[in-house]
Length: 80
Length: 355
Ligand SMILES: C[S@@+](CC[C@H](N)C(=O)[O-])C[C@H]1O[C@@H](n2cnc3c(N)ncnc32)[C@H](O)[C@@H]1O
Image (cartoon, rainbow over the protein chains, first blue to last red):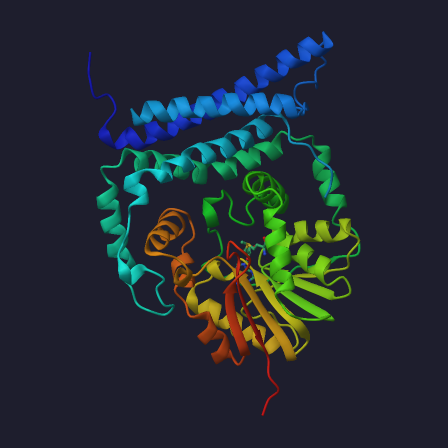
């Protein structure tokens, strides 16, 4: 109903919140990717397996490409 | 270093910071940002000249107000400045509790640390969050580890693999000191330069000081893990309380740009007092504005002084350190950028015999 629920002075905080959300989203996506890898590799998930997992070069490269794409999507939305 | 592994959230967060920096850096190429040119008086400005930086920055900000690229770049960079300290502390918090005991144990060894509980901490330092790092140099029980490993090594070092250490090695070698017996380092923080000094001068006896006990503890761990016997002390570089004329080399890395001018003068005088006759002064630090084009001056000044949490950067970058070192008594004073990137800038000099 009402436009302008946020005031103009909130706009910087909105930008910060957006990046903070992007950060959280990335952390989750990273974690999910790790889980998928572990499940596929081992078939069984031990409690510490995800937490201490260190990606290998190939997974790192995949993560890196997806991470860049995510960041670029958000920056593109802000710059549109 | 005490063995540790980043856990999932911390590791993914540091990856995110690294790529956010990389992706947003590309916005610097935007014509409006790349085109900022504050004019000839800011082109390689002589140290010591009086320039109106406040008006220059105000004008640049007006010019950039229509640039979407600049607004997004600033949003990203200020977010990283505001967030990186918390991310580092969170990354520490999720590590196994055993790490704290391992870090405590790593303080035992050949390197000693002398605390100064009654030290009066300078107002420009105490409670200030340099680089907008949450907690400043001291604000966490394991701040030396959090800063030295998680911020310096993982966050800053990720994009600069190998470079940070190589720069310190080059600075240590630039001392032109054949085989110093006794070295004093001021402002050692978590011991990155201390390690480079030890590697360059393996026979030297090294003393290093800092205001921050938490940072000194990390230097102590580093020293112990290398089997070194460094003497570490909590002291102000302006007034160390150490005996005069004891050191063949008195040095610092990335400390002067965090000092107000008056403190810098005191530290320089203290370095002179502590040098043996014939001893060497070495001050390695960021680039002075005299080595930068007008556009680079605007950029360095904006991102460090104006928004970066480095309140004395501009004062440092415009100070005539050759004049300061000479007026403290040093001779053969040279100030130059090292290597192809001209970084760090290194000031060297020598203490002459009294006449
Ligand atoms: C950027 S860090 C130094 C980095 C380190 N030398 C290296 O190689 O990475 C600056 C350090 O100087 C210390 N410092 C600042 N002012 C000081 C003073 N007046 N006396 C002693 N230490 C000081 C700070 O506590 C901080 O640890």
